[in-house]
Amino acid sequence: MKSVPKKPRSSLFIRLWVSVITSFLVAGVLGILILLQGRVSGVEFSPTHFQQRTFEFYEIPIIEQQITPIRRKTVNNPALNFIRTNGYITTSPGLPNRWDLVSLTRGLTGTTEADAELRFTPLVREKDDAVYWVTGSKQNPAAAGYLWPIIQKLALRELYLFIPPLLEKANQIGNSSDFQSDLEMQLISDYLLLYGNFKIQGNN
Image 1 (tube, one colour):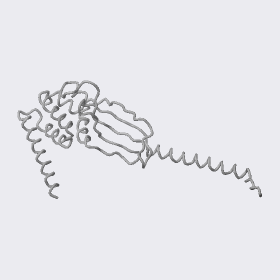
Image 2 (spheres, rainbow, N blue to C red):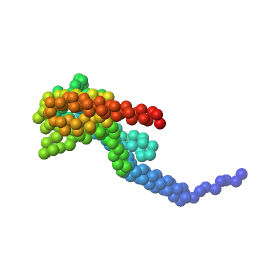
Image 3 (tube, rainbow, N blue to C red):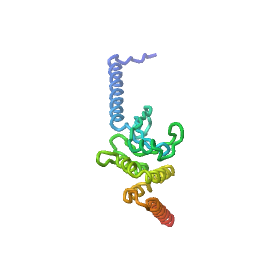
């Protein structure tokens, strides 16, 4: 019986090193890809507590497989703090158990705005170095007491689309005697417009 010739030890050594180097290269490329494109971050808003927070984690790009725990951080938003602490909205005891997505960023692909962004942006704009809606609420507490509960109800029902025009209307009419009726008319108009759009889509 003929014996099988043994492969040279130098050949095995070369293959081993090729395998090791290849593994390091693959791991390095994957690591760079994760660092550049695997970071996921975003902003969330709680309509039950009027709080804002950020989140961040890493995932394997393309397959979107999460590989690190989610890190969350509460954001100190003066406008939301003022509305909440002055009792303009109703909050339940304990920590928020509902968070609506405001925006999401994946790697270098840019930020995607969610429905809550429509409601969130107007509350963080500033005017004369003071938070715009905080100043307005302090100047017109009666109007604020009527406006913010409506805003919260719309957010809880995920009707974020209605909030920007309602805030714009409130900004226009200020503390006029017809403040409540004007806001109600704005809501009715928006509801009818939404209903009409749904009806048109249903007929297509």
